[in-house]
Image (cartoon, rainbow, N blue to C red; front, side):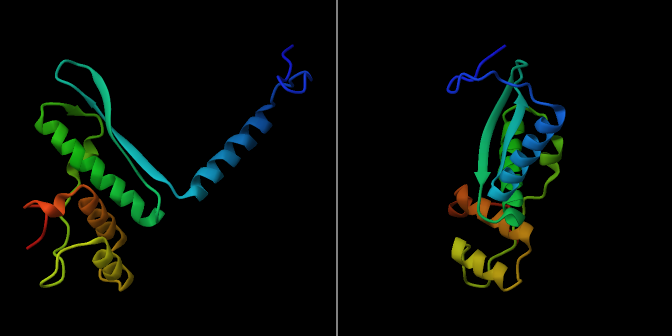
Length: 147
């Protein structure tokens, strides 16, 4: 029988109920932490299975999921352009178009936040804009913005 490394007492085997309770507690803690993360899985032309584009957002869960989706879809489209096969094909079907900024303005985190608070942007649009900005795409000409 194994002994606890600190107390020296015999270790008791966990019952399925105790295991389930610990699992549920862990899941609750993770859900309450508000962290949304993801990564891209792809296969190279040589058949190598790879993982890339790890991303994480931990601000507002309703928006974070969309920001993560945007980053992963953006990476997926880039991977396909390089000849890789993306495992999650749904990422390739996401429309990454973001709405145009209000007249005479460029998107910034502050502008997007104020437009979202005012109800002019959905959670998805706001998450996409946040990711768009974080990727530095606002600095380059893009076809992903509505006119």
